[in-house]
Amino acid sequence: MKLIIYLFEKVVPLFLGAMFFFALVLNLVDLFMHIANYLQNNCSVKDILSVMALYVPKTIWYSVPVAILFSTSYVLSDMYANNEIEALLASGVSLFKFTLPLLTVSFVMAFGLFLFEDNFVVQTYEKKVSLQNKLLQKSESENNYDIVVISENGKLIYISTRYIGNQKKLKSCYFIFRDENKVMQSVIFCPTAVWNEKTLKWDLENAVQYEPDGNGLKMTQLSSTFTDRLTESYEIFKKSNVDVQSVTANEAKIYIEHLRKAGLPYNEELSEYYKKFAFPFIVFIVVFLSIGLTGKTKKNVLLISLASCISASVLFYVSMMVTMVLAKHGYITAFMGAWSPVFFFTIISIVLLKYART
Image 1 (cartoon, rainbow, N blue to C red):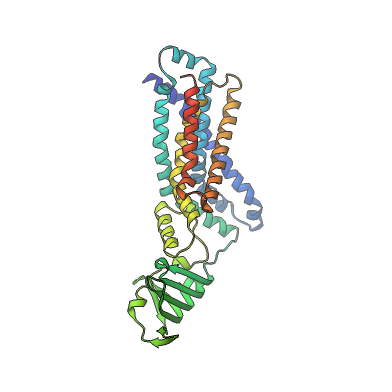
Image 2: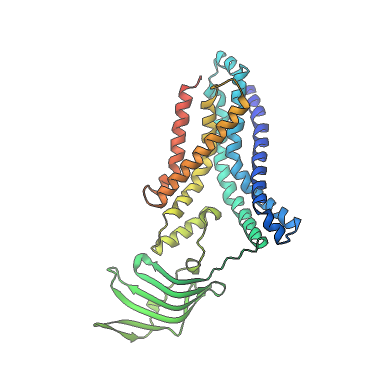
């Protein structure tokens, strides 16, 4: 127990200091990137500080993996340089047993990091982006033009010349209904369709229905059998796509389901969804990696620890970027796009630990 307390007394203060340092650096980088525009738009100091405050949770989320890697790597390397690890091994306590509490805590932290991001970071970051866009005088219109949405696995097609976001309204709409064999059953045209929040379907104005008749079409009475199927959410018609990284896991899942139902590509969004669960486990991986790197040098411990944590972080982020791009284009599955870097670096950590002095 004394060894565990001693280890955490050395790691925790360094971890907290490194986390706040890296978070501060990220916040200042964001500030300096936009400070010229802030000054040009005569933004108040209060608003600028509000943006920085709302960005703090996101910067902490980014900083935790790097901070835990640096603190663990530095403490273990420093103990090795001071022959404390040598004394520990000589007493019969293995390196793995000594650092097992760190691994356990880091594994729990991975789940905590996911919950922190899903329940807090997403909300504050959305407010930060909204306020920052307002200060920078950036506006995003939800209006969209020349829209085609495929629903019900191709059995229902929505075609509209325009979507008006603030009114949740479609203009010049065609709704094409097909059977299981993709044979047309009916076509409904209406000048305007308005989303009904109560019934959760589209209300049609002056709609006309046509059905196949030999080699042509004949006008028929509007049937609720078809109109009741017009339940595709208005959100799918918006111009701006949902950034899966900026919403909760549940919201991302709903959006991906909309894309799937509409027959639209969703590999990239599904990869980002899986990444929400995979990324927090970098906390566990970097601690595992730090243990494996212990004792590689007794000189320049601070410099080597800093270099190793930056190198490992960059390699992990780059490998994840590569696998995410591969998943986006369908070369690998969305699951592997998010999780393969986690599996790969876990294997590397196990190999390093095997050849470390334990």
